[in-house]
Image 1 (cartoon, rainbow over the protein chains, first blue to last red):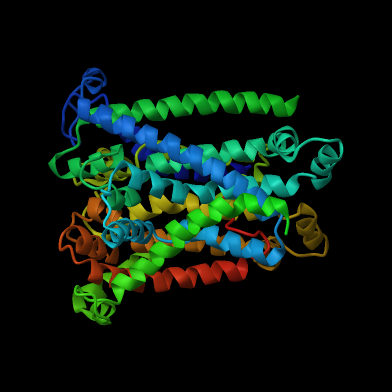
Image 2 (cartoon, rainbow over the protein chains, first blue to last red):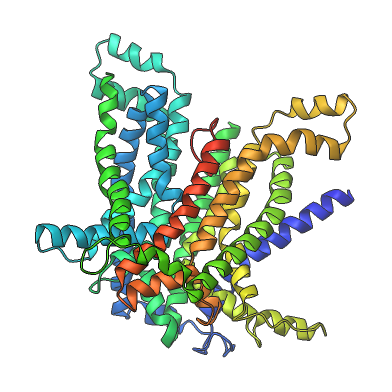
Length: 264
Length: 272
């Protein structure tokens, strides 16, 4: 009994630690005072102002477009790659998986710098007109997103039974048809997890975007970073709260549905 | 050759173009002077007392943060295992969810919490306890690191712990091992690959961060990440920046080798 209570207290304290900053930000989004250090009364002003702030709205759109596109492309590339890797001989398989691990284990700052140097070096070498901007950020995000997809899809693939796919082929299905009817449904949960992880990582990235973005474009992260010195606009807290609460609600819905499903 | 293998070719091209080649570009910049001639001065600039000091501080803070993360995460992972959740993805979710609140804002929130007249100190004063004065010190940076990277320690350890067969543990008990013996002889050795994963997943980002030190160290404390970032954005000396990055990569390669050694069975990081 004592053990159970102390365990509960331990978990509670750690989650307090993990979620205290988030609670702080939510509270700040209702703070009438612009200062982060002082409570100036309750207001909803930042939530209404938010939608009139063109800069924040542009940064939000850019962030969401990059997160969506990079997650989508990374999911396609990563899913096909996983199927390919899964059918390889052991030695090749481990070589591929080691390359996949590089961006996950490498420091963000090194990945960001290396990509920036690549883009600029490429431009100098071939004398082409390529400025750092949307495209370079998108390419970088796809690059660091693919490993999350591969690592989510691979375990599902190794659980699937090879013979069902072969049976489909024997029964006259084309490989593409067999893929969509047999393999994809089996690995679909992994694909979705991969996509969501990729989307979240892209949304939360600052370092790699910081180095590859060039002057013309801002995501929410880089926008916040430039605001740190002059003071964060409270609208940012409101926006983050909205994003957080939206995702929280979505996840609770999905989770309650899937746990019902599991019980059935 | 298996036809399916070709499906991974677009990915292979992508990874070579945007992972492997860029690393060689850093090597190129790191070993050339501004005029393009070969030099090792960029790498040697790590021996500059200021750079050496920040490298040492980075190693020190990353070591402390990793240790704290391990001490906090292992019991948590054990408790979570003991709760026998039938829904493992829920636990991953709890740790991923904070990422929807921007990383910079989350870290900035610690400023508000740790400030001299911040939330924690206000609460401490109300309880007539002594206040803490950590903001803009290395301690604040360590708190920021532990906060940001703790999930990367919990998840790999949790993932190996739940794979341990309970029969193995019960067998040890049946053979007369007490709790401590079971832990030292059975549970900990079996969870070791997860611990190694966790250590590298925390140590590398902690050692190389420049944002956390920037936001919580009051921009007076320079970690090696700050030095490199400034070479690129302030002094525009890409060659020195690349040379210093190469020094960082030595540490990263070392941790990758460590993972490869202990993480063979699971074929990839244990994180997800």
